[in-house]
Length: 169
Image (cartoon, rainbow, N blue to C red; front, side, top):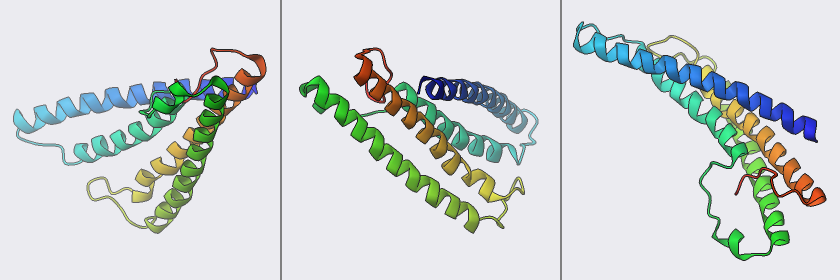
C-alpha cells in the first residue's frame, strides 16, 4: 500500500509542476494580450481561448491534488463531535462517495467527449473533445488520490499512526 501511495504522491508532484508551468505561461500570455490590445491596438484572437481552456485544465487537475492534501472545502462539524472510531469510518464513507461521484464524472465526461469529437473550437480550430478531456482525466486522477487517502485511513487504523493523510483534517 505504501508504494501505491508514494507513486500517487510522485504523480501529484509532477501534476503540480505542470500546473505551475501552465499557469506561468498563461500569466505571461495574459500580460502580452493586454499589451497587444491597448498599446499595439492589435489583440491576439486566439489568446483568450487558450487562457480559458488552460484555466479549466488547471482547476480540474488541481482539484485532484487538493483532494489528496485535504484542501477542498468540507463541512466538518459532525466529525468533531463523534468518537475517533466513528470519525474514521465516516471519513472512509466520504471517500467512497467521492469515488462513486468521480466515476460518474468519468463516465459522462467520456460520453461528452465522444459526442463532441467532430466539433472544433472557433479561435483555435482544435477538437472540443480535447477541452472536455479535462473532466475524465481530472476525475481519474482524483480517484487515484481517493485511493491513496483510503489506503492511509486503513494504515492509520492498523498502526494507530496519527499523521496519515486524509481528505478531511
